[in-house]
Image 1 (cartoon, rainbow, N blue to C red):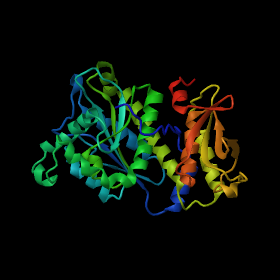
Image 2: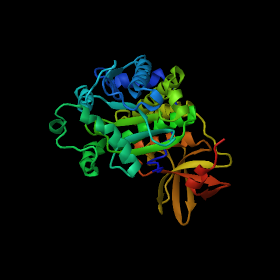
Image 3: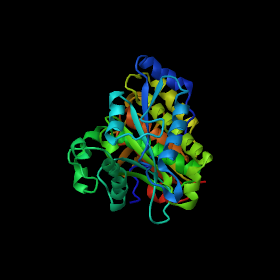
Image 4: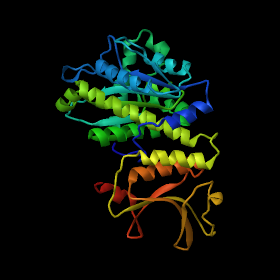
Length: 373
């Protein structure tokens, strides 16, 4: 399956102290809690493609991500493991739940009998293809290494698709946020590290099912691929992965501060989104203009802020007998993604991106197939 759930290709940010100061001021007691989960450990080495140990590599990456996040104010990092020990899948989720965590991030390395390569990031969901099911099944099979697994997991069978059906329900509340974070992670790794993009996907991972917060599982790459395995086993590769995962988490936290309902002042909101846009890596499509369509109506509205939930610079155009209202005007696809996220959180959940060439609307998927400069 190569279908992307969303093209949330968003802002690669070195987080500003301002954003975290706002967050801390809003909630001076409870920090933003991030649980970092290094896959496998102890007698469960994970996959050992080309002789490398998934458990060691995932731990090294997680410790580096945590070290960067711990430098930030009002962020608390909790690790499911910091050493080479075995932690049951059920306990990994329980650690996050007991901590009342705001985010759960699980890091793994992939394996395959072919020469497959690339990064893919998962959120919880029913498997959309046999390939996704096989990945989830492989990670879930660690259950068999635990004592009394039949009792602990209530008859859950990692090899049975029907066991996955009920797993989605408890996480539906957090799915959109999980997808946002997964897209940020995937985008950073693909764009900055030039990894093959295996996309954001849904699959039935037990460790995601039992967490009560936005959660993602990152398959950083394939140890079974000679080149990619060597890269992930290297200090440089692990540092690179950690940097991009950490940056994605920072950007995710920034997006939450933009959308926080307590921030009613439109001037503060505008400053925040402008800060995010200014620090976004450019992905330019020459000759293309992207806009976010807010609404289409037969009613002619004055495009002033008080008619559009405080949004400034809304444009009105008449097309096909309707008045259409747009926000943003840029050739940078990453920036328009920031703008779309912003307006959706401002109260336009159905807002979407449209593309224009020489003033005429064109098919967005076709535009995105072209190579960005």
